[in-house]
Length: 493
Image 1 (tube, helix red, strand yellow):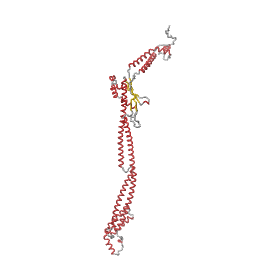
Image 2 (cartoon, helix red, strand yellow):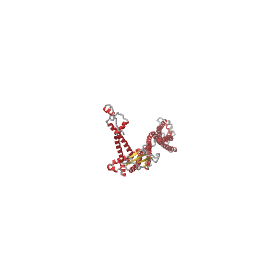
Image 3 (cartoon, one colour):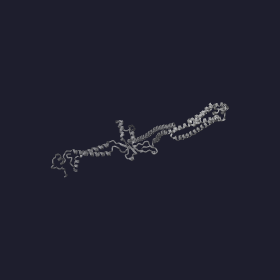
Image 4 (cartoon, one colour):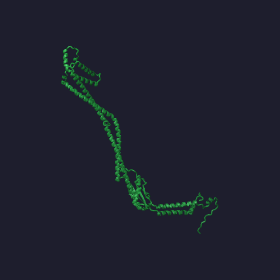
């Protein structure tokens, strides 16, 4: 084209169309004829589809909660990978003798890839229709397409049941193992708590009130025993005094007399007390024991201690002065003396028993005081142990509940009461081929022919350097055109 900036009129466009008509017709005819030829010779492929419904579980989830909670889309991906695996598809190919011609020239992997391309899984696009999906298979034989599509649908259903059951069984086994571990841990905690209670029995927090009551009772008992012991000691002193009065001379001051006027009385007194020297040991033993008892309770400056020491010293003086003038044999045979001695012996035994009882009660008081003092420490230890035990028990109860639910879910899947894939529209023999799409191909060929024809005409017009009017000559030559001879056409006569 010599003058690209030139504006054309309708007549000029018609003129160009007449001039380039064959550039339009020839490509158009070639493309249209090619499309028709392809439609005629192209192999016919048939597509059979099976509609599968995702049926919810038959038992309400309020009663049995399923362990398989993944979405349908996610499970379809895993199921499709399993069904469309090389092993599964080779089984289907062998079962239905598919791709007999292709297997002669292609390897097994290439045949499997070809079949994978012919399998289509279609999910509904609308949200309210996502409870179903379609499985399609494309084949040159409509009967084969129908059979294989139904077979693939059954494989999807079987694989879904298998996967759901495996997941349910795996969940149950996992929870059972975890439950066993939790049970062992709970048993260990129970053993630890039991051993701790046995080890510190009596010092536990729940025994504090009982210990306080027992301690109060022991303190009261200690007070009563102490009172009984003091009463027994007082009785002992009284009995010892009575014995002393019997053993001592009636006139203890006879040996201290300063007058020596009567030698006869002195001789008589000496003759009376000549046999009483044996009573000195008993009196000394009595006074010594009495002094020791007083010294164990009082200081040396106490009046009773001073009096006891004085009596013992007087006894020594009386011995040296031959002051024992009573017949000890006669005194020991006195019934009153024997009764007092028996009472003294029994009182000594009572004092000994009260002393032992007092020491025993004191040991028990010390023991229960120690228990009460240790109670806060045991309370803290028990609180820590019980927190661990409560946490372990709670975890065990949760696992036990989950294990029971998982077992119910497993039974649900084994009995096929859970969510299932169910064929609601099985594949039927297609009446028309899926491919090629004749109207579509012819329409595409028509538009492609027209487009190519006009495109080729436009390209040829752009490459044309000839003059078609005065403007082209002026543009190419740079000269002014003075006159133009119009086209002379033949007219009818």
